[in-house]
Each structure stands twice: as C-alpha cells, then as structure tokens.
Length: 256
Image (cartoon, rainbow, N blue to C red):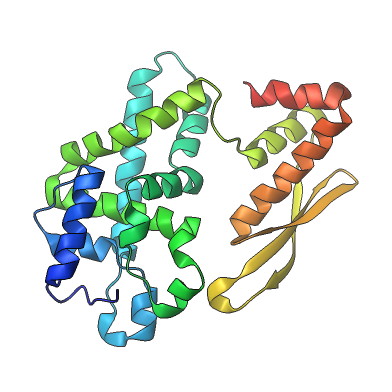
C-alpha cells in the first residue's frame, strides 16, 4: 500500500498499524509518526508529493539503539574490557540482527514501499528492514521517551546478547579474519569488488577476499557489505577445511 505520511492514515491503514503495535508490544500516541517510520524513500521516488520518508528517524533511532545497547552491556558485563563490550555491541546492533528482529515483530509486512522496490523484493532486503527498525526506534523515542524505547529495545536485545555470551550467535567473519590476520600474519584481508549486476534498484555485488596469495570468491551479496561478509565466510571456510595450525588459530580467535 502506498500512502503519503502528510495525510491521516486511512481506516484500513490504522487497523494495520494497530495490529502491528499489538504484535510488537508498542503503543504510539501519534500514528502519523509511526506511519512515517515505516515509509521507505522509494515511495517518494515514484511520487514527489510523498517525499517524506523514514531516513531522519533512522538517524535518530541509530543513536537511541546504540545508547541502549551500550548502557546494558556496561551494566551487565562488569569487569569486561572495552574491546569485548564493543565486539558484542557491534553484533547486537548489526544489520543482520536488526533485520531479523524486524521480521520477528512483523515490521516487514507493514513497511510502505514504492512499486519498483516492492517488485524487486525490497520487503525482504536486510538493509531496508534494519533501517526501518532503527526508524521505528527513533519514532518510539519521540512518541514515548527514552525509558519506554529502552524497555522495548532491551526486550528484543537481551536474547541476542545472551546468544553472544553463549557463543550461539552468527559469526562476524570479517572481524574474525581481520583479527586472525593481524595477530598471526601481520597483514589484512583484502576485499575486491569484482562486478555489479542488475538494475539500480536491485543490485547484486560480487566481492572476492584475498588471504595472502589465496583468493576466495567472488561471492554475491545484495549490497557491498553483505558481499564482503560472504567472501570473508568463504575464506574462513577454506582455511578451516585445510585444518592444521591455521584453523586452530581461527577457532581460538572466534571463541575469544
């Protein structure tokens, strides 16, 4: 459904937003603000009269999210080094986690997209979902204040923090490889964008990862960041398959 955030939500949209709030455990006073948080910029690309989108709220929500995660980790993990807190925080506020949380609360079904973005599968794109999740956080902060936004966030983030502490989380292969290379080879993985394919609104990026003289990939992703992560995973899996001292060192860093 396409809809201008400058207008009052239709009765149908109000019912949709009410169902979303109930499922997500939210209660907005300002439905227009909630609707704006769920409006992707592709709506305005196709209709200039619908130029308002969720990007400013995304900027605000990113800051609120970072503060909530950092404060919780600081209180929870007494005595842990700053580097470890930063590592855990980077995971729990990552695009991967935010996009999964967005789907868990039904945000993917409520986001407003332009027709082109809808047809290209935008409702399932991690970047769009993660950005909308941050916009939702920013909107809830404006509507209800930091304490309410913080309670909402901690309900979602606590299980993700526990996954990291119990080593059950998805691995950040780029970070693992970088730490391994710095520590044992005194160099860095080298990522190279090999090609792009597809139209502007539905790009696929192909990236390779060089570890010394060995090049892994190219591997595809829907954005450059995702392609680099996939290339890093390919390099990681190749090293692990070879076994020996190098794989043992990777595991040591992975489990730090």
